Length: 178
Image 1 (cartoon, one colour):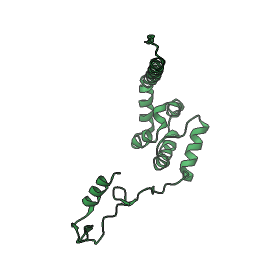
Image 2 (cartoon, helix red, strand yellow):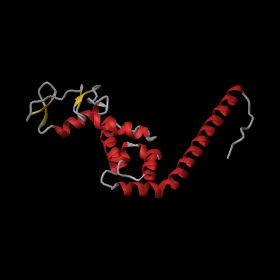
Image 3 (cartoon, helix red, strand yellow):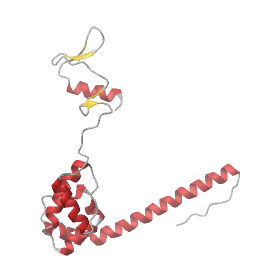
Image 4 (tube, one colour):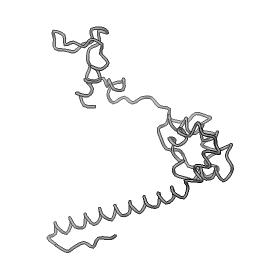
């Protein structure tokens, strides 16, 4: 965070901000001075990250292990999101049909903590039905995304080749793929 935004965050939190006779900013209500080494946006010194658990709790670990045995992948997201989502996923999977559970464990869209957290109020049959209904579209989207990635990689490669030819003094045209 730049110092201007950090100062703005301090100002927003200060009740009576004033500049004292020494030119330092102080909140008259609390007596706290502005300290540029403290990150007022997140409430801790710069460079210090919030303490997050390094491992999942027992219930979340059990849910992840069960999902892995059935072919599921680890969920993506922050540690706190994964902790919460693994519990949700385990609870929903044990009440799904085998077909719906298979979709829930194999579809990339369901491999995110965000998916399970957002689906936490849905019944397992609703989640499974949504996955079954959207499975063909999501597969097609994934295919298109892969084609786009390959196309982008080819464009980058063609650009590098053109730049290299320019440096060498060659003016040969680069054949563009479609």
